[in-house]
Image (cartoon, rainbow over all chains, first blue to last red):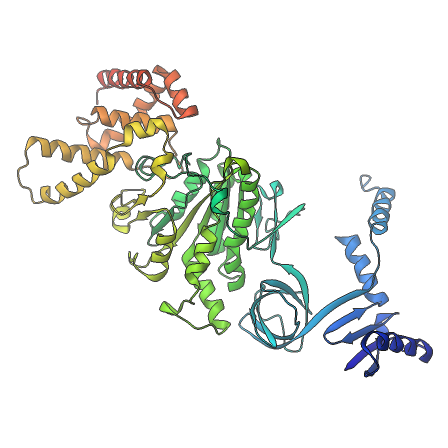
Length: 71
Length: 502
């Protein structure tokens, strides 16, 4: 199984590995991780696993705040 | 600008934000593998429901209508090809919904409840477009009349609250006019109206809205619109949306009237959608479930039992025929689903008989039971008389001599035909209808020239209304007419007749 993790460029290896460990705990050790970088997410990460997206980015949180304010 | 207080705004925004909790978003997604003609094939999204709304990358919505092993077929609820291959799709987990409630009154909305009248719509309640119809135990027989204000219909093809009465006819025969007149006639009753335009020209819809507005009927009406330029999916959804809005009122004990204008276009839109989704075509290329499409829609009209609040949902679906052919596929389907039909004929329309109702082919299967007492008393034999007249009129055309009884019958028939002619947007009250038919019954019209009949009628109605005002208001409010009322009305009619000279 492959999990794509999108992170900002300035992330430390330590943090990245911690994220990977977290997914290993949930899905088992047989995972290939693909690292992608995207500055636009500001902070946090997006992980895509088996058609499910986990989105913890600052960008999406700001978008939700925007939606709450303008709706 | 002083009314926009900055402190107020910031306090409001702070409150909104404090109610909001930021959390990790988790969603399932799929990918568009093929798109075109308003239909998209999507891979992924394994746990999607039938009818679920999907959100495409660019914010467009779609609705799932095909569930296959590894992929989904969805229709795009927007015009044009705004979705492209490779786009990601997110399941919203919700089926298509529409806002419902009193906020909808006087509004013009599209099938998914977005306002089209340039005013914001803030609704508190939503309802799914597809709902199960009320069960047998939840219903009661139709027993209250729904007045259309059109004499020919109220006397011979009466409609009851909770009934489904089809209006069928060629183009330009006055189908929509009958429907609109019925809405206008609900002004002083407690009936809420929903007008659902399906695949109509925007100009036609706009003129209907103008008519409703100018006659003060929009305040108790909701207009659900999908125009000819909307996607077939939107056109397919609009009657379901209108029904959901109506059902909400019905469940709250209200009486509701829904006009579906028209279901032939709805069938065509559904055919388009089905063919694009590669469903096998059947007769006239309609898909196999075209009957079920309309039967499940119209089955939601009901007369709820008193335990459930006693609300009713009356449906007036409209079907447009081609060249008077009522035995085409969709017309026969809808005729068999509904509780009767009002058949409008081009020939009658062109010969000046308007509303152009063919009384021979029009029936109401449940309405008789729902007719008001006063109307029952005066309308009993009209249909038979009219059909006898039609029969005789054919012979009389040959110019052969007729005996006295036949001549009388021909005259009465001609008077009745003239009496049933009625101008657009001029509904009769219950009392007026009763008085006209009572006058016909007593035979006062028989020596009046046909061309003067309308004038005589309007003068007579005015006179009778003031002369026996007690009976008039009683009939208008309760629909009851006892023998003394009848005698009072007949004597006023005869009095007027004596004083009248042409």
